Image 1 (cartoon, rainbow, N blue to C red):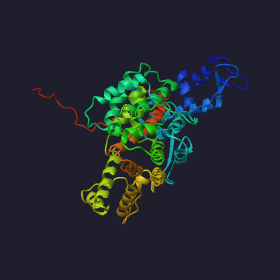
Image 2: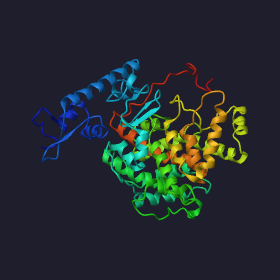
Image 3: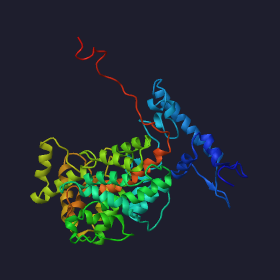
Image 4: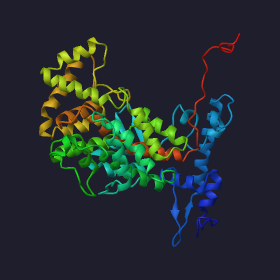
Length: 449
């Protein structure tokens, strides 16, 4: 039986029929399957797949409900450009989609219990048991592939490295990554192919490309990461770009854990930027570029940089007291403490601190972090977040202050791709809210007499 056949015994329907009932193209149907929104079954001895008609009907009903809610919220606005009924499809609109709450099968966060999960599996447990690449594959495909390694395509890496190396010597890692992703995309003639397997092939090459487009730390002396062949883990490659020191196994394990914990964290501002770009059918490189742009701010990606500088100052002064006092006196929040999604401790920080406790070189930075937390929490309950743990990792590794941004960006790229894949399966241009004009009324043409 082929994909175009009518169905099989047992009442299952073909790809063509399932796509017709959902009102989508077969490519979109395959994307639904890859994102876990719909199940499929291969035809024994054939090339096609079949689908449960009841499951297809339920998915179609969710799409209609989302479209109706979006239409009601749009107060009569028409068409997908205005966010009306045309902006529907599974996962869009109303209380479960659109710009209020967006349906996603990637990450679940429970603020009350302080737990978060990737595709239904506890994210902290995943980061404790598996490497970054394996977690990324789980996020993308719902499959665990032990020993998975990513490799940078030579042509893409050459373009990205040349572009990134043209920046001033004092350019930060995030500056170089933004340039590198643009250059890598320009060198990929298949970037406009948004089929799931093509997007995943792009992602598996883009992540190591972003890393290897960065210069070796300290000119490569002692880093041990220059010229490493295929099969080297992402964490090992990234270490050599951030630290001139030869890493021990405990340090590499801590970095790999950090990357795994940061793979995704719901609809953070950078992830939302990625989904908006993907909604306009921007290719994966452009979607990741949107995420990198949104990441470059003190309230998101740069939080780890601020925490790093604070810890360095605590170590120089020998006490957190004057450092915390200086932050509070100037009206600034103490970096690395508190998180708007968690009432208690950030679960990512908890595991990363445990990993760092196994790193001999992290002893002083860990003590400085504990001193900072104890000092700031004297009058109200405060908890460490993942940015403080990242700062301990970067300080202990002899990395620059901006290292936390680079770790965050590399880790989160996998999540951005997962969300882009989800958005490619939705109706295009659905993420466009209606503007509420608050400017002046009708006015004469300026300069007219």
